[in-house]
Amino acid sequence: MDGNICAECGKNILFDDNRGLIVCEHCGLVHSENTIDQGPEWRAFDADQRKKRTRTGAPMTYMIHDKGLSTMIDWRNRDIFGKEIPSKLRGQIYRLRKWQSRIRVSGATERNLTFALSELDRMASNLELQKNLRECSAKIYRDAVGAHLIRGRSIEGVAAASLYAACRIFKIPRTLKEVAEVARVDKKEIGRSFRFITRELKLNLNPTKPLDFLTRFISELELSPKCQKVAKKIIKMAEIRGLTSGRGPTGVCAAAIYASSILNQERITQRKVAKISQVTEVTVRNRFSELIENLNLGIPLKSK
Image 1 (cartoon, helix red, strand yellow):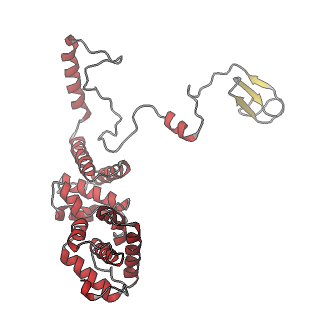
Image 2 (tube, rainbow, N blue to C red):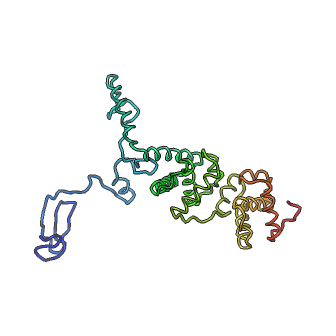
Image 3 (tube, rainbow, N blue to C red):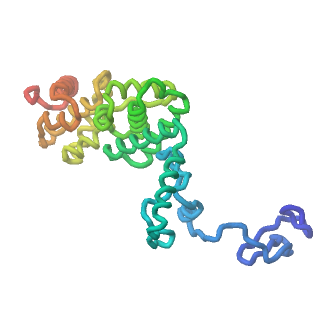
């Protein structure tokens, strides 16, 4: 037998895993029997099951400074069988647990990552963001650390900027103001850090659009799907006429929702729309005036 070629007929040979035989697929010559299977001991019946069973242990994650690859000593005083550890050994286990936590964070870079990633997780939890977005924000922060972009800037500012950049990548409607509310730094610093890391890391982020916020604002205002559909048409008409250029996307979206609520007789106050969209009532009023003056919406000017 030479590699995967049959010595008898020169055709391909294959491994029959049911009988443990290496046999020629053409002439049937058995080259070896009782062959040891080097594969895993488990079986999978579909691709999803195979994906789950090929990995053992916890998955790798960017949200932990060591990517979750190090070991941990559990805080519960129980052994592998679930039995309580005797009181004589608890002091030793406590010392081992303390040294383990110290060893996991060895240098200044890891201490930086530990603090920054915990801040990212805290902010993402407050904003109710999903796991894959958190992983993306942690990856952006790690790239910023690798490119030495943290020097001269606060860890919290760059972490918040990384989270905002991940929201923009995933097109999750979160404004800079919302991120600043859960961060421990002000909006200006987050904005400066965001512009800096996007330029240095070459993150090609498209500007946010009014449509990105529409579904969320409609849901929070508890308006009907019909109202959302009309507001979407108004925003698209405004984009064609160039009314969104140079305007804040949340203000245009709020004005379109307000106009749609009037057309669908689900009228709500400008104050409520402004509160949900986090803009001032003056902004809603100005954008609304521009819409009814430039678009043929059938809303009289007195509706302002």
